[in-house]
Amino acid sequence: MTQRTSHYPRLDYDPLAGQFDQRYRANPLSGVEQTLVDLSQTLGSERILEVGCGTGRWLKGLAARDSKCQLYGLDASQGMLKIARNGTHPLQLLQGRAGQLPFTTQSFGLIFCVNALHHFAEPDSFIQQTQQILKPGGVLAVIGQVPQDRRNRWYVYDFFAGTYEQDLRRFPTWGVVTEWMIAAGFEQIHWQPVEQISGDKIGQAVLDDPFLQKKAVSQLALLSEEAYAAGIAKIKQAIRQAEANQEIIKFETQLRLDLLTGTRP
Image (cartoon, rainbow, N blue to C red; front, side):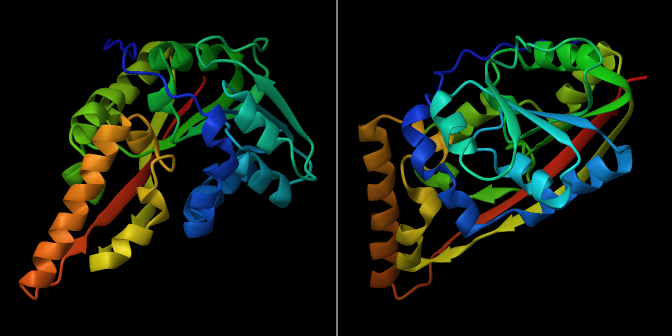
């Protein structure tokens, strides 16, 4: 089995919490929400856990569609959980880490994480633990993107030195995650695409991209101020050069989010 422990710098999400949900105003990722709703309804789960729940975007989406579920969220950031607690939906929220899940065995019918696995210090250990706290027939669902997928295009990788290489280290491939699920004893492992993010920008419009702000995404938030400024300068230089040559410059964002599920026998 391929094991992995994350040694890259850990990102403190407390300072980012206040503006984190701005990304969903730019793109609500409705395909992800519908996928989670479908899973919940298919399984008929009474208790659902999201690990790395952040501001509660997905738990609140589930609560709005199915008020009968008991919804639990775990996140390492108290600042993110403070945002998650705002709202009318009754969510059971706890501060903690994915490698130490504070729940009893056979507690949940569905456990999921969205764009979070790469933040976990020991993602293989997390998957092992979820197998223990799922009920028989329960499902673990992992949603995210992998930079190794050549169909993905993101201009951030082109202009901010080291971001792509670091993401190759941070994000496990779906093949590796499948190995972890098999080793943990999961069965009926299934992969499928769930969302296509398309957000190309032309010329100066890229400077208004909310995902270009330093605190908008972890790839940029992990950069030093100097490295971030250097990337912005490269973008502006590319725009000036294109304008001088009377050319159109396109900054590509084409990212696919996928789902991998495994069932506890």
